[in-house]
Length: 371
Image 1 (cartoon, rainbow, N blue to C red):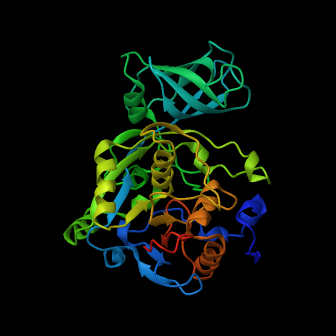
Image 2 (cartoon, rainbow, N blue to C red):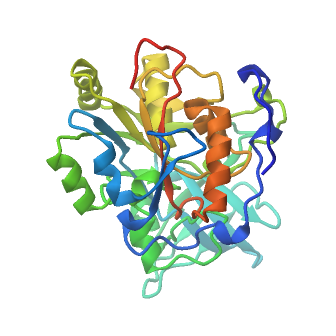
């Protein structure tokens, strides 16, 4: 990793968020136990001397009155395989379920089928449902939308959620090289996943198991939930050197009234808001900035961003040149994050979705309010 000198938050460019990661540090499988992964604790020391912990030590780092906020989205079995009438292979990755059995999907194919063409999709073993996808055009823009709109159907008239659950595959990230397995069905999903709609897991929350949640409850740490349906765009690197030119992908979110009240109560008692994952940060800060509790967000958080709600962050280690790398740099400070990543690589931490985690404190410009 290259040392980068401090600079104004307004002059960071894409290259500043690059680093060299040994391929063998990309986790291909989860840790044997959810809460048995490693935790790099950067809350009680400088970035140069973080504490190496196991994730199940998290209760010792929190206190009664703190509020953990989780993303309760549930990952769809969103990857479908099939073929065109000509025999050409097709892969669909459903990004969003629309009305009328329609879905918006990414499509991988050698030659794009014509509007109105019907693709024959592969059914799960033991089923012969006549599963198909009829292409209606692009989405959301009919001419240049990044996704394609399809009608998913079968002989029984089942809805897209049922069809994906029966015939789809777990949409593992592109850097995981094996095909999805029974292990992935269980482990690429949080233990509290509730609201169907994501094509990527809120990975920081994968470290929590029922025993750890019970420990946190016992010491008086409160819990609340938001929903952000994580899209495939979360894995896409930023491609413009000038960050202001980047077009952020859109994701649907919801901050329920119960969560809004829980945050207000936490603030009133002097507790800390602890976001579990960057998707939770994006959700909470989108609501704080806009006042809109439910809708689509394209929030792009880079160094210099003024955080309104989140005090602590549980997060995994992210891709070079990704928007998530920029978010954590904005949260904990650019130089500290780069130093923490150097440490993680030197200490052989496991990276990305099935990897290890960090606990970060928000860098404060305001010396009056301390965490």
